[in-house]
Length: 291
Image (cartoon, rainbow, N blue to C red; front, side, top):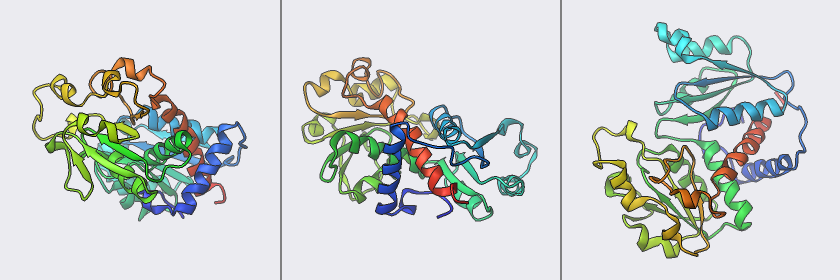
């Protein structure tokens, strides 16, 4: 395996091996197995968690990380993305971690490089390491996840996180329900709902998503507060139900999830962030440790 573009690039056996590595890393048991490896981060969209998480993961394993400042790169002078990637590839890095606003860019670059390409999010297409860390977080909590019911709530049509989670979670035998206003729900064979209250008694996990207004061609709601009145995940909504709450970040407080619930032990948002480093360490080990 040279690249990670989508979750279905990995078999269930490979994913289980990644999770075993992540668990070992969680105990502080890791060595500098990526010493003398060079990793380039190419983020054409803003990122806090994903970029930092990958860089910390790489450095924990001993790799050298080079960040391309896209605003000052030759792409601003008219150089194509493929030319940028092939020129960087000619310098001999072992991996490039790519985020781009357009779906398909990481796959295109993978067709032209010897370095491993890791998709850190491409448009509304895929975000494989986010889905991996989400499933890993669920497995930490439930141990056995098969048959658990997950409500993905929010702007699903524009969400790469939702796409990757739907593929991965259903492969592991979880039941996924898509919840949101009709304009946010893609055509899907999965169960759907436009009412949170109708499904809250029938799920084990609520995964809230950010409303990605930058991807909307026209406003769906007059304001985010109007959206929140229908789809904000609140402590009051959950009551005393044994449901865990997740979010890929960044969280719009009191729009996606309310303040009280973010401080509630049922919120796994920060645990997801911690697990992101562990999963990305495992991914980097798999792709480039033996190169």
